[in-house]
Length: 271
Figure 1 (spheres, helix red, strand yellow):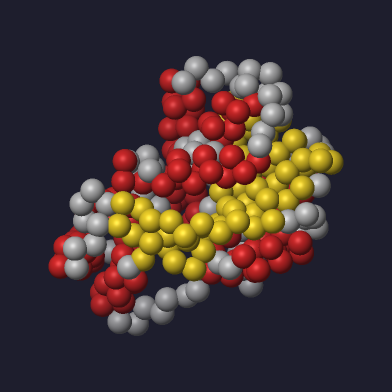
Figure 2: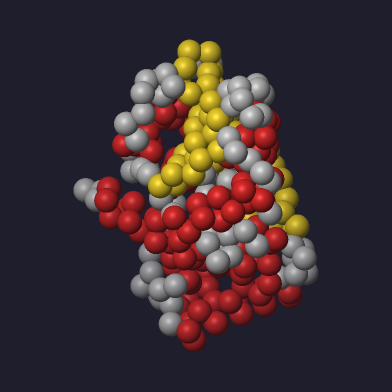
């Protein structure tokens, strides 16, 4: 049986640790895909927006700009270290219509139908019961409002991700790679089905086959440290960590890899 509190604690720990690299230039894709998610919503001045799993504000900050001073954005996340970065960035931009709050978005206790738009970018798959999570987000959405769920597609930073897994398995031959949570919803059909199972209506899914440029092979290691792989990396001893790093960098250098393939899915539903 899945221990929900354990998952929450582990997820928060991984991304608090990853905060030291999360906003590095090598991870510019957070801002890119966050902005594109907001663009799909066609927000209006004065809208009230909820951004769950908001990280350092990659979608919350563009949303705050879009809704203007008469609008309001509430960002929710489990990682306090990421939200500290988000607050600093929004303050630097002079945004007074945005708030970042620690919380588990499945238990916010916010009123029904209280937001014009709700956003979750690369976060829904961290929840053990994704259908229940969609139901909770849908509950808080006003009639006519839009829900945006952004997730990974089939290819995630290929071929570097595959090299990473091989290097981890070389360190731990008994390691059994479990399916990653986002792999349950990595096709347009499966993502649409998730939203519809959670009660969402008028669901459209937009697929993007993108590339992410690397300025050097070292960018990939920075990306690994600044994302969900951080939990695995931090379990290695220093020598093992360096062997995994060298295996990754060596492959990218030997094969002259200067860009990675990444598929992104944007699901937009209207109530």
